[in-house]
Image (cartoon, rainbow, N blue to C red; front, side, top):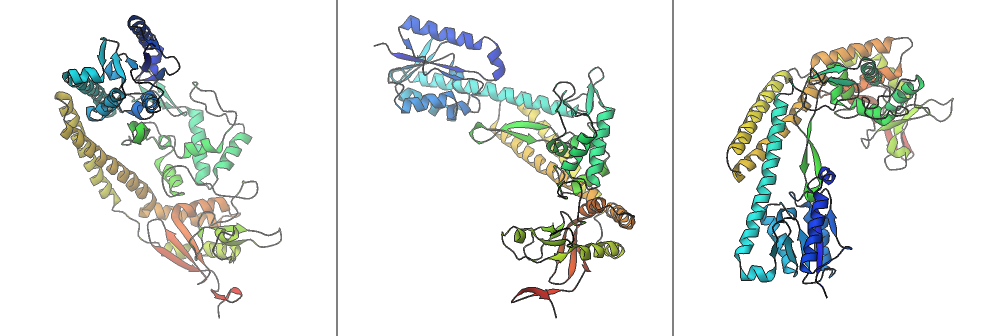
Length: 524
């Protein structure tokens, strides 16, 4: 009976599938089995297409992993042959990790054949000539270093591109409201699309939810964006795309590049890098962008504030802000019938998920807010005006880390790979990543809690509450920009307004309540 041969085809990237690598490796395998009288098994031919051996992912989850499982399951009989173009096609992992993979195949009684040079690796040969094992190890070392050097060079090239980002675009991919003039390398806003982005932010700042914004754009027939002519346009505006625009730093002119890193199990992870301010022309000014972000307490998409049944309006000044004094959860508006007055109740209690069902008249709470804007403004805690200095110090530290990283990269490029330098590079990159996160938070706070910013919002709140008619959505928007929460404390009959810059202001709205045998009653 002819010994079986199994072909192992591995590509570093899917793009290589477009070349002749597949054809070449297949032809080599067929030629070898014909010349040596082997039977090529076509049922268990492993084609680990598009999986890189550098991270060892194919040994764990791809074709090589499947082959090793087939060996363990007895599907690959002892005395079989594994045909590979070259040894580095099996693994480009660190040799310390690659050697056990190589040994596992050999110890199963399988002979590895490298078709490129016609060499074979089997238990008998390695026992007879141990130097063959050293030879295989040298091949693994070379393969790993070639892949590692390529990765370092690509990383260094990206660092260089970032350094020249103000002179030359990092990439031709741009947001849908921006176009790249390839001749000059300059970015330009697409006027009609930039106007739509500005309108989306303006509506969000006035308290409109994402559903309402999308509905308005659809109702008015505003054209969707697509992707600058390279992608078919959507048939309508969707809430998810509105959210994407509201959460995009590019709307304010900032690019946050990402790099692909390999996590556990070879899984690719997109890791954000240092943000590049003023990289794009800003579609919205910094203050408007930060106001919208502040309404939901951080980065990402603007919050959804529930309105009426049609989602078209905000029915409560404290939508998204009112908190239960007992459990700390959100309070929601309840109106039982057209003639009943709406009340605020704990959302958990309303859903039967715990807490206690205690209702507070919404009208009493809102009259207190409207009638005490001056008192609330007068008790405003001091804003944090020391942040400019803190930001400047943090930016200096980040620049120093960037210089240190470039020095290490140059040292690696000049000499042989050094584990010490590689470890130092990872350490510095981790420090810069932490510093970038700190700077993003500092800039966010500076736009939210500086004294000037808070005073401007309070002036706006005073103007909006005096308007006739008053727009609840706009009032709610400014309140959410100014406060983290408003605790409707029926145990004391007061509202506790928690400022974004820290601190709290208390305002009485009604008579306190106390818990009795029959539930919560007015105290006294």
